[in-house]
Amino acid sequence: MTAHSVDELMDLLHACRGAWDTPDRSGDPVDLHDHALQTAALLRRRRPADKELQVAGLLHDLGHLLRPGDDAGHADTAADAVRALLGERVARLVQLHVPAKRYLAAAEPGRGLSPRSDLTLGVQGGPMTAEEMAAFVRDPDADDALMLRQADDEGKVVGLDAGELEDWRPVLEHLVAARAGAAR
Ligand SMILES: [Fe+2]
Ligand SMILES: [Fe+2]
Image (cartoon, rainbow, N blue to C red; front, top):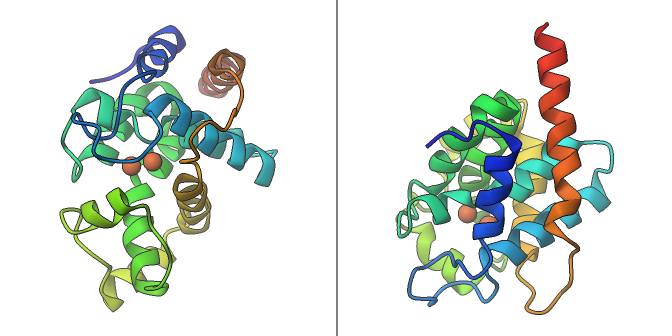
């Protein structure tokens, strides 16, 4: 699935209200809507200037909405959905949220994951091997991907108000317009 407009992306995000990372709700305790807003808000606080990173945080789990139950593929699904509109860096950061989890699971084995994230780590490939870790840190987006993952893991607080989805519409529009301007 490819999103062709900001309206389409916003519709997908609004559809995350009451949608969950697991169809039977056995997973994380916040819905995909709250998780998206919390993740993006944490990144906005930590990297105020990096709108692409914030938006990647907002969109990183759309794969759970687009293909329910596909834990192993959900990051790629979301990256494919946003690439045409928001560009390669946003898509890469979205895609890397699972490899970043695998990296951190190897680098910091005692680091807490939510029970659901811990469970799905297996189907996502488990902790990285030393070789995979070496390749991961050579990626120019690795640091940003780790920052996104940190916010991802923290952005699961039941009842925490992280703002309004509509506040992100102008940010998405700005990024799309900036890309169109750069391509001209
Ligand atoms: Fe995810
Ligand atoms: Fe997530």
